[in-house]
Length: 74
Image (tube, rainbow, N blue to C red; front, side, top):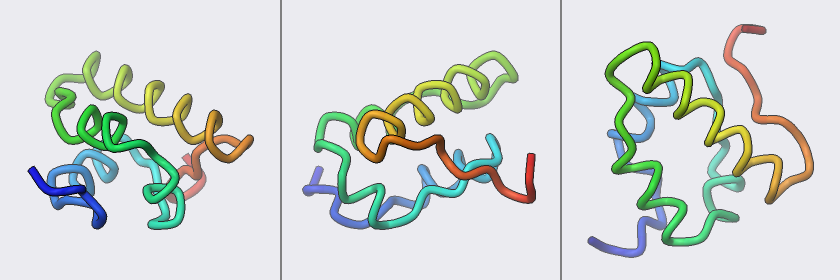
């Protein structure tokens, strides 16, 4: 796997599923391990999607000091 400089389609699809907008500048702040974690984490069921969203929000908060942006005001 490369350095994941760009956000893979798998992650963009998961973001759509959980209703979170992750900007490329936020993606760039994540460590390689965190990026891989987002690529590999399951997001198929409602419970998995809720865990994915919570984990992503925690990562964004850790790196930016603010909550992850929700799509469409969700």
